[in-house]
Picture: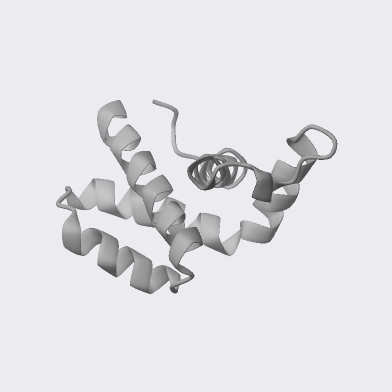
Length: 102
């Protein structure tokens, strides 16, 4: 997978996480609705789904890590929703997945 494809997969995972946080739908519903509107290669979809599903399963842990990294008095809920979604997917990828960087 090229670096460009990995970036696209990460972007899709972050957008799905954003939808998940905003709608409260199940991860399966979010992914199904998201991919019904977006066309992408199977390899990009596979990586995006792996990141999104893994980040959702690790939400408690990633939120805890995020909380510890914020300035005293700040809570993750104080961040913009999209920023929080990006950070949660990024924390999951950095701590759990072994995708090569690019």
